[in-house]
Amino acid sequence: MGSISRLPGIMTVAAIAGTGLMAAPAAQAQVMARPAMVSVPCGTAALASAISAANSRDATTLRLTSGCTYSITTPATGTDGLPIITGNIAIEATGNTVISRSTAAPTAFRILDVAAHGALSLSGVTVRNGSTTGLGGAILNAGRLQITNVVLSGNAAGNGGALAN
Image (cartoon, rainbow, N blue to C red; front, side, top):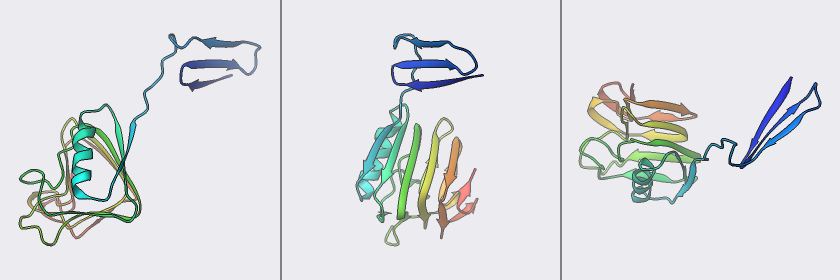
């Protein structure tokens, strides 16, 4: 039996039943990069900007402001409230955080769209009031999608209701 632990720059292997202990130099150890963590101020423009920037990185976690309602009046594209997810993005929230199509929005649009090569992990947020005659009022997913502790409420679509996968 043995155990492996990885720390930035060092990989160690300890043999529990034996007596060996080995350390590999940093140049020989394979270290996985940690995703960038970005705190997003309470504002729709800040959220849209953070998603656009995250699309160009390897992996990014966007931490939304607790208790904030990100209310979208003008869609980022003709059919999507926020920029299309093309990167590897996690959106995390706590404490009654909402992403919503504003009741004052002059047009119908879905909230989130995950492209075929995109990945979205969404947790701890309510997504509401998305509306489209197409697919998925809240989320249209053609890529990878993971939702945890998410409320989809008041969304409507021609097909897929809140979520089209």
